[in-house]
Image 1: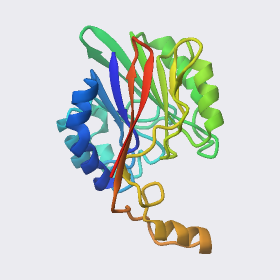
Image 2: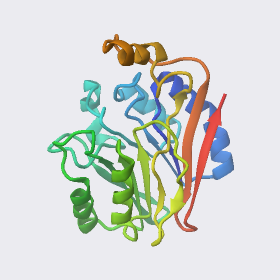
Image 3: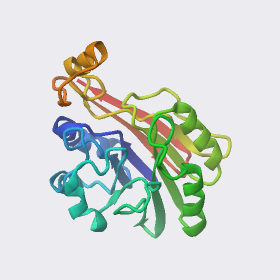
Image 4: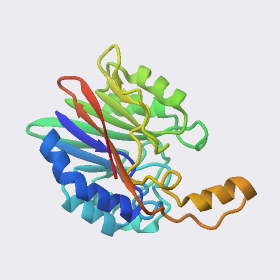
Length: 250
């Protein structure tokens, strides 16, 4: 089973850049499934039905989310019947925290989870949540997008599920890490896949806005950075237990 996973698509500039390079990525890696993190696609804040339909038209199999999942109310109009996988450890919220996709007679279980360190203490424990999901669902392959701030939490989680899950890819920090590897029991891992969008801003936002926030404590609302772009992703061959970082930039 070959999966292409594209890190946090930030704004329309990121979506356009993803589409620009998708044909070449398909040709080179020939993935069975394409999964993207789409929690920032609506100009950095959630996802709309328009963006969702565009991603589906491009051939995306599933869209994982994160801490901005429900900031855009448009999602509530279509999440239930969509291929969106919102964090499973949200409490009593719309949508599904995991999804099983059938491909050539094989079941691929896609799970999205949020970390709690420096994030949201009101979330269910992601370690306990994954235990419940794995106990109640069977699949040939299991893929997890762990959307978290702390590298320590991501690493601990990976060790916790090594041997029970095929892959854990980290998202949220928008900076690709250099620790892609295979764990002792075969799990494929990277702390953060990185983002897809402008490389001239600060994790997707215009740098002037972020600088103002750090220098004065005040800044206007976030605006998506423009200019040169980057695409960060990973390719995973779950049968051969191979993970490969992908980085494309202007």
